[in-house]
Length: 241
Image 1 (cartoon, rainbow, N blue to C red):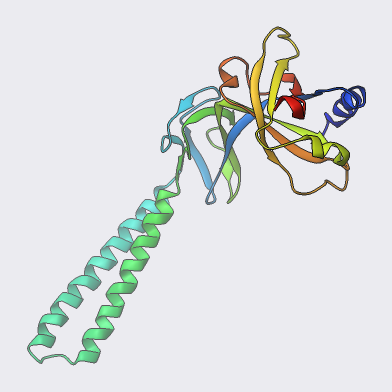
Image 2 (spheres, rainbow, N blue to C red; image 1 turned 180 degrees about the vertical axis):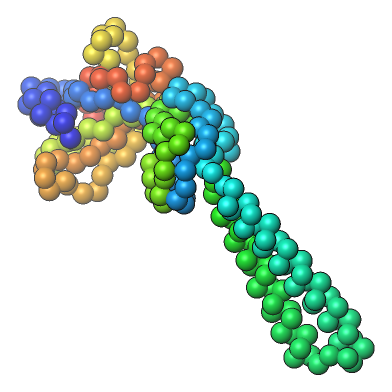
């Protein structure tokens, strides 16, 4: 919202013009926030800001020594329960055990299996993976840091496609249409023209600013400028769409 005052000034000057021009930062169209799924201590950070990663790449590791022991213990308990069940089923087939006794041991084995799966799941959460292919835009942790559930760890972006959030007065929304063409001109590169179009128009008016959020997409703009670049966004007049 810190750019709203800039947008308002530019909008006042363009209110009676054919095209609409506003200033806004160009941001990644797709961003993923990576958070911790459990409490722990960071054992290793495998990436740094600016690194390119693929979906599923390891970003960091939590200390999992206790969880590995817990998984090993759960595995032993499951194998014992399964062995008792196997022997009971053979004895039951010969009439040496009742169906109720066999069923009780089957329930014990199933419970042990669940505890083993839970231990495996807990251990898997010590490996922090990238949710998508992209660029590490932020690395918020270091080796030795403590985490808790939902602790922010990384931000991964796809830097190729960029968007701009424009905040439009309600009385100008009738001039806008999904797919309407737009052009971004970076403030520090006035000769560069980046083509785009309106991707989404919010269905609500923000009660604090009295404006409507309009998202303009610029496919491939990230190959020419960095995310965060301030640009003048020109929306074509409806007659040109």
